[in-house]
Image (cartoon, one colour):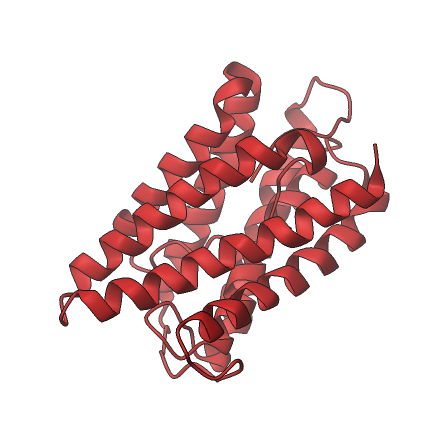
Length: 225
């Protein structure tokens, strides 16, 4: 593994993902004329398309995790080197923050702003557990049964999960953290972030330990999301 290339891929890939998530949310909201369904459709399609491109392009370089929950689950399952976990987490969180700043600046908004969008309630936390578990299982099952289609599987799952979960499927601790810095359609109030992140990480731990118990493969770096 070329660590420098892998680290760059994780950092810039996560940044592009968040620029897409927040930027498409802003654009969709601007053009939807108050119709949240249209704004969410634009947001979900742009996010899914970006995931497909990023995973296809960067998967061979870094595994294309772009998500601390993915890195953590794979590390616990023995499918990702544990010594790489902390660097990946730091790069994912910092890359996500950069992506949100870039999206804000592209739409002539303050680079840093606290979101005022409250996302609270047990139903939202349940949604995040479902969304995160579904994403991780999508990755694992595609790797096992159709590895060449992981990018498509993840892109389609996240696009759908925007609609079938009440939380609109953050499913990513770095995404939850970074989106508190944009007071826009895709934002989340800072007070709501810890619960989202905790549920996402707890779900990743549960899935990772389950995979460890059932895994028959040796540790390896796999394309993910």
